[in-house]
Amino acid sequence: MVLLDALAHWWQKRRAAGDAVAQPLAIHVHHGLSEHADEWLVVCEREARLRGFAFEAQRVSVPRGARQGIEGAARAARYEALAASCQRHGVGWLLTAHHANDQAETVLLQMLRGAGLPGVAAMATEGDLPLVARESTRVRLLRPLLDVSRETMRAYARARSLAWVEDPSNEDRHYLRNALRHDVMPAIASHVPAYRETLARFARHAAQAQTLLDQLAQLDFEMARADHASEEGDDRLRRSRLQGLDAPRLANLLRYWAAKRGLPMPPEARLDEWVRQIRDAQAQASLELPHGDAVLRLYRGDLQWTPVYDVSHADDVMPDVILHWAGEREWRLPQWKGSIVFTPVPEGESMPGSIGERVLRAGPLVAKARMGGERWRARAGGHSRSLKHWFQSRGVAAWLRHVPVVWQGGTIVFVPRLGVDGGVQAQEVGAGWTMAWRDEV
Image (cartoon, rainbow, N blue to C red; front, top):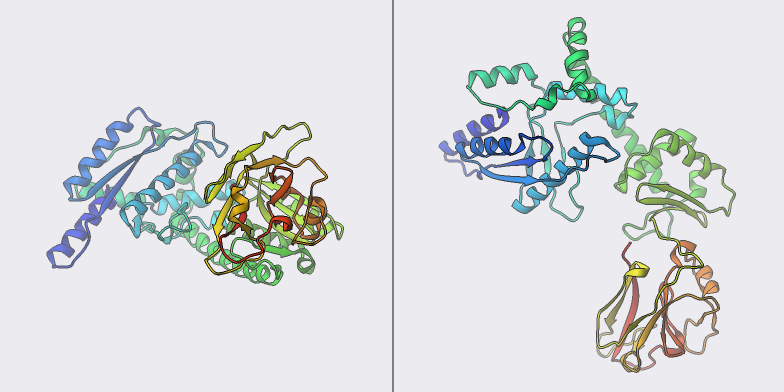
């Protein structure tokens, strides 16, 4: 309410001065966790509209059994909702009313939880809004009251005769943050009155130190990046180039890399185990290090992040899938978590590895699970060899070989990650199509 009132005052002054300023938007997130939540929504909408603001309410569902706890789950749901609203309305700046007491509580809370520098760096006055998709418009998060104490804000609210809502859950000492607020912070204040400023300064120093560590990790990342990993999103690091890094520096790089991929911060014990295995593995060893919804893999000397691919077992039965091709651009094969994409070759051009349209229409295409013993050739007149041979020679990792084989009658037409079989490749110009595999993991 303080932020709403102060922003309304600023906005009205700008309008009175003849400045062209957009109408502010107030966003309320309804978590559904309190029996009073509907009443709070009514209050927020009323106060926003009385001040001439646009208003939007977002209802979210907070899982009560989430691993990060109900507070963490509510925060994640809240930021997702805020990000969605900002994108929908073309909002470039989102303001929140975090204040100096929030900052001090966050720093102390993160220290007690054993968080590293990113955690104790706490909140910045300005930054990017979390959980906004990469391809989306950038949204900046601003906390204009971060240096203002709760006591000063309360005095402002009383002076302006503001009405506000007190959330009863803020009194529940079952939550560690509330226990710190009501039991610990007053005791600290009695001995160190300037504790908020001290903790805020510590948070700034931690943020500066983390920035330097990130810059070092970026240098190490570029140094270790595999030469053949040039495509965006295909970052791979050469293990041989990491051998010169000591354990803390390698841990810093892995921590930075996980954050760069949008993954949760690995616990210290897990990070130490990663460092040990990467440093101690034999020259040709393969590693699989699961983390969240991804896996850090060492394969043929390269470290890379991959999705968690399902592993097929010998007794798994994958039914055949039939397509009577009639110009489709995509053939979805969800049981293999992917699609075959058909792309026409431009008229008058030839494309190595393409397939003629007459061949595609000659009979039904059948996607079958690998049975073993299938043979493929790279070009017409070339030697046919086993799929295992081709996968190995082309460096297709073992976890990427769970793919269908496309047949037409008794002839192999296409193998994902290898291409169109040489026996059916187009020899003439025109009326050809390329076939490619697209993962949908």
